[in-house]
Length: 141
Image (cartoon, rainbow, N blue to C red):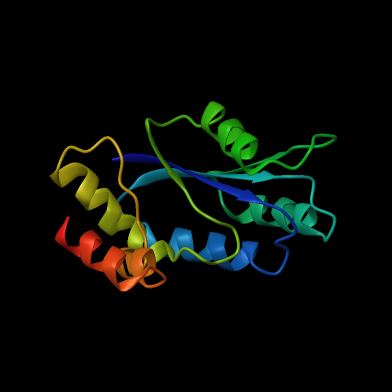
């Protein structure tokens, strides 16, 4: 299994080291690269990335200088610079726990999927703010 992990970031100086460390600790039997796409952070994230690069061989980072911040364009830039067919996108703010990456890859292989999407409490989050009637219809469907 080969995997490109794309992490779009903006001003994540306090989180990015933790995230990169956790990714490398959780993925053992997988050949992977990590591509951090920075939307020209102003908080010191870029300096942290330069230091991380010294310790993590498959870590790449791209700085989108002089461009308007744009999450989708950051992801696209990561896609264009990835070397593997399997691509995972995760937030740089520690919202996504790398412990789930092997589980998602297992589902990808097990069911020969084109895409796997992870979400916490998917059904609960989708229906908890709906009216009773709408919740009932959602559960039946």
